[in-house]
Amino acid sequence: MSKPGPQPNPDGRSSCDAALADDLGWSLGVVFRGYVAAANAAVAELPGGPRGYQVIAAAAQGEIGSQLALAHHLGIDRTVMTYLLDDLEGAGFIERQPDPVDRRARRVVVTAKGAKLLAALDSRLQEAETHLLSALDPVAQSQFRAQLSTIAANLNSVDPVDNPCSLADNVDAELPTPKAPAPVGRRA
Amino acid sequence: MSKPGPQPNPDGRSSCDAALADDLGWSLGVVFRGYVAAANAAVAELPGGPRGYQVIAAAAQGEIGSQLALAHHLGIDRTVMTYLLDDLEGAGFIERQPDPVDRRARRVVVTAKGAKLLAALDSRLQEAETHLLSALDPVAQSQFRAQLSTIAANLNSVDPVDNPCSLADNVDAELPTPKAPAPVGRRA
DNA sequence: TCCGATGATATGTGAAACAGAACATCTTTG
DNA sequence: CAAAGATGTTCTGTTTCACATATCATCGGA
Image (cartoon, rainbow over all chains, first blue to last red; front, side):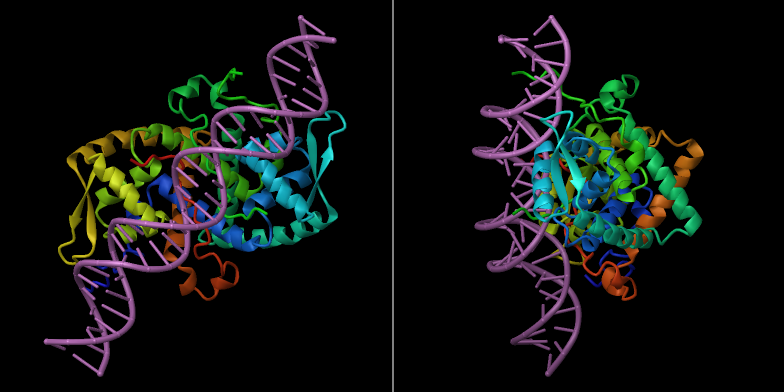
């Protein structure tokens, strides 16, 4: 590479932004990847990476319920959730308590240690997020967050099988291969 | 026991939207996953899934250059790009032409068949994207697209190693585990 | 009580990503 | 001009992850 000639893009790193910028999929991929990378660095000490944080955060809310619901709403497999919770529990951040009303279900609760860590990670994550969106001014940032949240909430509430009308477009979109956010992550 | 339905559609599907909606990571994950699923359905016949589309689309622009630059800007590994291009070339959608100015590099060019498919997929993808963003009104949609594009362009242009100031936050964010959009995808 | 359904876990398998090396070619330097 | 380092591509091997399947325990209804 390093062609000083007519092509102003040496290695193509800095020139093709405009070429692909109008592709929603590409933009989404870049931003998502950037988030994962930043979050990964921010929560490096947490087993499961960003996923672990999301699990703890969701558990701290307390509105989730069983592991299955948790897994479903985080977009990961049930069996994977088992290992993830194993690691998280092994690290002492969460606990599996028997559900009083359903003895086969386990309630995921955050330990004091987990809550403490969560608070620390929260600020770090917040900082990373702000840095991620630094290309937008504060007003646009909050706007973007709100819009993204709206879209996500809509996607989450609308189930493909429940919406015959929307089924025309993504009839196969049920669960082809729903990749999840956390790429790294060590198992014991 | 045969499964009654493809989508078990468990209980906790519709309750925790509000609880997690303010988490940027969660929203990003949901939207990204939704895009991957929709795109996967839209480009099911394409080897490599959404990635294959992005490769062809980028190649059609012609501004990329080598495979390496292509891989870097799509956020995938070089070795993976080799296989991906193998499949794409095997399907007759792209061709590897020797770069006239650099004999070790290969220029990825779209074949007529590939261009034809690209046009067809483009409209389908556009439809899927619009459906994905259907929670926003048209004005907000274009706004969201623009903002996302801005963020992506910013992330793509800013290299961690080039920005010592931003290095404090994501020093490890270089390429810990950049998961990529295409989960499915069969190799020959 | 019996039977199907549901939550959680264990096990096995296949695929994908990653690291490293090998080879060819370009660029730079002496 | 020759040699050394850098870069692009491909190949090989390894590890990890996600998924499917099966199993066990429990809940719900007939």
